[in-house]
Image (cartoon, rainbow, N blue to C red):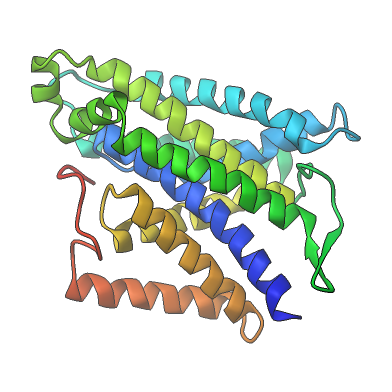
Length: 291
């Protein structure tokens, strides 16, 4: 395969990983704990897109994107409602264990209802290739990259350049102090889960569009997001997206010469070495509370 199409496909996979990692960071910053249902929510977004597209198979997936976003945001609000949160006494472990249970239930339901056979989602703007310098580049990959190029900076700005972002991080780092300052931490948590789940669902839709989605992909997607956040430094949105992109490019390059399991093993080994040398990640933590 020519290098340029391979790089474009790697960038498309990296864009999806970056969106998934940002959704992970969003909830980590807002709640102060990891969302262990994250990978299964990504796959849920892919299956929601597939289900909606079945009603109008000839329509471009871009038409369904707002519907997927709204449905997944509502799923996030529901998740926030069922997660046990005891005001002023909730802990990161409570949230992590609760989301683990939700993820296990969701994965089981998806497997029973849909099986483990990978499926493809609706292309955002059609399939086929676009000729660039005499090379056929995947139309789907280019659209995925463009979509992520819009959403990633938007989420980064939301976290770092808005009043809501500051309230979100304050609620995640010290909920007691945040409440004392007048921040409604329960409301912030609900909005955080809504936004984070919406982003995860969009990542799942893009994954189903360009590649494939399966009920069994949740754990792998969770691990990739966790690794990107751990390497970048807990709570850092921009670095996490960058690391996720690099992981995807590495996986794509390795796929040309070795089985995927080899790339995974190298990534895990790199994580272990980095954490042994720099336990706080490459850029240090942005949040003090984490699970």
